[in-house]
Image (tube, rainbow, N blue to C red):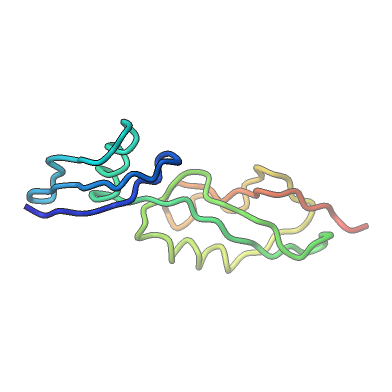
Length: 122
């Protein structure tokens, strides 16, 4: 039986979790004080995902960069591919929070969206 130790990020408590796996399947999770800890541990050891945040270049804006993020979590193994996509694009101002900056990033089905407003320079 394999054991993995994790720190839960499901709530502010940061519980020390232990997940026991057998043949790649989670058999038991201990250390959690809420249901979110159990859910987090099972997902993290079998198929970890992340929200990616970054910046994209802006032309014609009052600032040169806009903060962006993935609209949903993406498979952890896709992070570098997502970052290559983000680093290869630029947008033209104005930009509004929630604007889709890149659709279906790295074939994940997840969009990259703006998380800041950028005004156009007149």
